[in-house]
Image 1 (cartoon, rainbow, N blue to C red):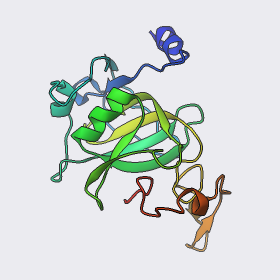
Image 2: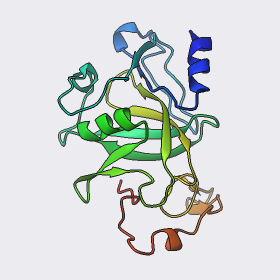
Image 3: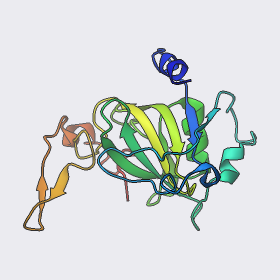
Image 4: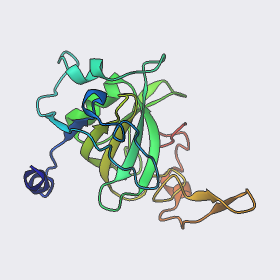
Length: 197
């Protein structure tokens, strides 16, 4: 199974897999998903689901009813670089954003400040090509594994987590910008790239 998935991921056009981690199939240890700089997969049964026929809002997707959306109809999506395991960003998805992500194969999110759908990379060209989407054991968090083109952060960094808490309890920058955000977003600093937590 792993060999087949690996072969698919090597294709030029990536196949999107949704892996649903059901608490019904998890053991005691598998029920707790541990988050760190690399997000580790829960040790439970993986049920692959291939989103190959998502074309319109009229399509009925069992996934949408399986997920636990918050009171605003949103779910947090953690984005991780598939090769390095680096966590790139966190943003929100509504059902339309998740549908569009599955249909196009690039990440789309919901902006809570603008109350609208946004396509990551629409302004900068720094798109995120989706390799797989995973759901945690409580079905209330998404983990999206991507191949990041350029930087993920609208401030010019590869990852939005470019600061860390030092021993003094203060924030310090630990990464170097990889593009000039001022130039990229000169025309619209509140463009669709800006992620509002």
